[in-house]
Image (cartoon, rainbow, N blue to C red; front, side, top):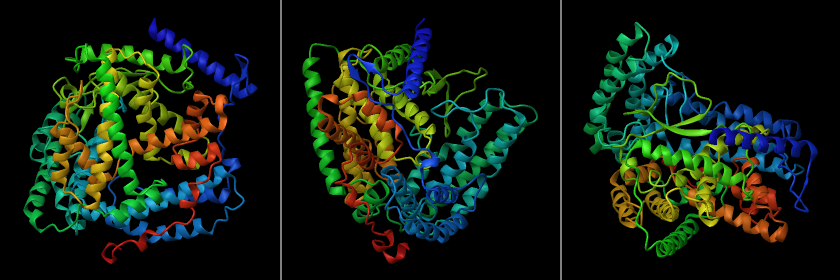
Length: 601
């Protein structure tokens, strides 16, 4: 009944959206509704820019199969200056604002590659890079991951053979690590030993246990393999795991000789923020924003606690079944709440699937796995088992109140935004991903339900959890800047993170595993800009509200942010409001080479 009602609702919304596109603005409640958001297609954009974007993007990444990592890096170093010269030669003075933003997006992608090649230098600094590449080379072929994907069971012969081939390629990938790691960072070697796979922070997942973990995974997977491939899987997996084990022993033997630095310096952090993320802030401003956001989050959490002082605390679900019941109810409420009952917060899209959670396997070092024999016309999300730390003790509260996760991850979070961006008609924007826009949008939709009185299925105490997460995201910025600037060590960051995010209300405090996840993410990938992106959305909303006064339409505002693309919010502010007071910070770039030490070039 509920699913049928949801489908009917989606059909009506889709019909209304289609009519609006064809007929233009309509009259509702005596007021003209905003027109649907329009995005320029390829025929409205400079052909030279589109050609350059397509050719440049072809040199990014590692390609298919097992690349020669050092050769790929060298080729990118040789080709990048030529692409940058071509970009700089384009005369964009007479272009539309939309096209000028696309120009800046492409320039930021070139600056990102420049930063990857000369600052992060993963192939020569980071021992965990090769471990993760070897594991992901197999994991990309499996059914599962956080969002269910891949073949239904049993595996086809072709997929089974591809998995066996990827296992056999492990030795070649790790051998490149031994050759290429000329400036190894000991703290990044620790990550390789502690958390192989780059994201599954689970006790028993350490590299020293990888033979047993690969064997367990292969024994379960072989049950779903065709013959004769099934008989080959366990021996192939054990052989691959032994190569990882040998690589780990090599790291341990050489750790005392590693001289690479785990930090990149404040100047590099500031350059990346301004040139790659196209944010009008430096790291000092980001820290101040984080400190103020932390204070606001703790204050508002206390206000919620005051309202709830006579209510019992809520705790995580004890079983997957209990959580799925809460989650199914939340899924139905959330999508309807955003689009129905007079809220008018966001437009639905007919191409966005229904999302539901379900149980699966959790097999290290690959994490989420599903052996499903049934096609399902929905976006499936695989859950961790009942005894996993994320289910028992995660401070983020996802297993305690599903709505905290739903707004961020599914609808209208990452699942929603991913499908919308795939349908962007602008090739430049369709191929661009801005982390602060993505994470800021999703983090914004953790706090928005609290502000608009969403009916949390766990009751009023569910309203406390988003503010706990705000504290945690603020610490990511504050500690992350100090860590990347070299002011604190990773060990100090692990300790401080747990101290600064203690148990609050229904929150459980940051566990050891969660602290590893937070700090290691900064060391390997840089700052997470959930908070910065969210605050930029608030700023944009305030600017637009002051421009339109009573004509401001929240639903249209949200549609603009998500439909115009995964674009730095400072640039969207220019496009949506016409305000260009932040843009002078982006039109006179400083080249990365001017801030680097000679040894890094």
